[in-house]
Amino acid sequence: MADAARMAGDYQIIDNYLCIRMPEEVDHHRSDEICKNADHYILESQVGNVVFDFEDTHFMDSSGIGILIGRYKLISCFGGKVFVLHAGRQIRRMLQLAGLDRIVEIME
Image 1 (cartoon, rainbow, N blue to C red):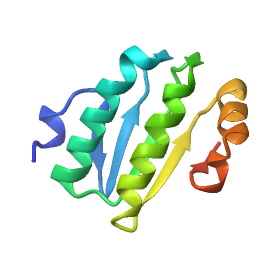
Image 2 (image 1 turned 120 degrees about the vertical axis):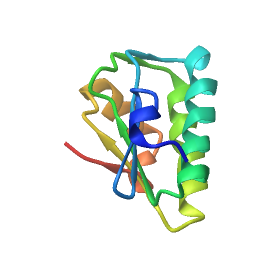
Image 3 (image 1 turned 180 degrees about the vertical axis):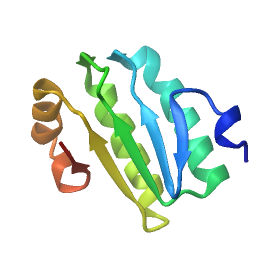
């Protein structure tokens, strides 16, 4: 596994957490790349939890929901959890409408 210094800036491993800084726009064009990279780090690093940081995100379509559900399915196989940080009002509402607040911890 690559150490944090060699990892892409949007993906960092801190302790047992893979932290992913989400882009300004999360759409189907970006979702494949995010899923592929996240899965790689989860499997190679054997992290226990995944944190998605939406601080810079201003737009997210349904592919963002798919990103979270897919990573939840993967990490929960290992007993891990998925966390969402800094979700703005619109993104938080979308996550709640999709029912993700039942499987993902949405934090302030």
